[in-house]
Image 1 (cartoon, helix red, strand yellow):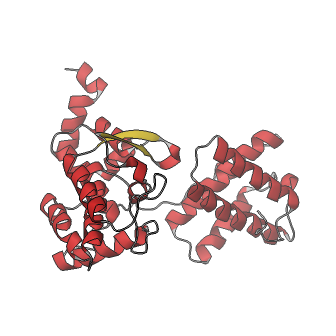
Image 2 (cartoon, one colour):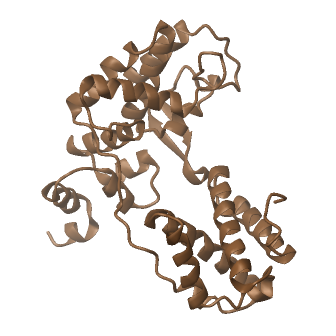
Image 3 (cartoon, rainbow, N blue to C red):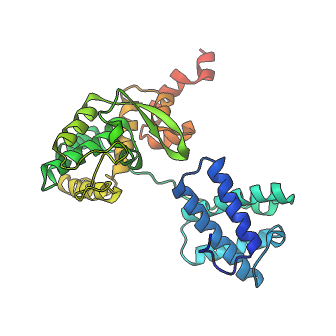
Length: 314
């Protein structure tokens, strides 16, 4: 926490540090999420110090009112923070205040009642089945070295064939290979889930392993960059950019779109939302619905076939 601005009082700094420790221990937040939380709260606490004319201790933070919150939000929008990002910042501030109010015994209603700015939820569009197949067929031809092409095929096959996030695919280690029938994945919030591994995905990974010039160590990254270090997400993004341009696909054809495609194509093939939710590792079914591009009629079919209330009325 030594990188915090001097405008933040020691008391507020300690409170932030303790809250982050709490989120790390009990909230299941990832290190990336914690880093984002820290950045958001540093910005908020720094603004409040400037807003009130000096560092604000825990007692002063308890007195932040609705007008102060509105001033902070106006400041954030004024410096170009988008509605989605501001909503994330506000969520972090509310979580911090919820925790702080419980420990310091004050009423945080003024902060917790602030409405989040509205924004349109934008998700990468899934590819059509033939476009997804074309991506898998062509992505390996972008590399100058055969083993790199095989690596790219393996990674993209895991995204589409198993519905993995790019971070999940790249977090696999050599100890995970050869891939089992059921792969244990540790996803967002440190939650574990079991994902079936298709033969095509296992074969693609094995083809890459046979060609890779780099030695394997149990704890080392399974997918390696050209120099032998762990493969970076940007490398996968770049190769997909080249491929989609050759295929004439839109800019929405990203690595994450392959995960969306997995969910959408599985649902269209007759899979039920609850099972797809478990495969994707979503905490709520509404999130899974947002990840799938199906028409209303198809969703109603799934609803009527799977929802307990719908069944009870038959």
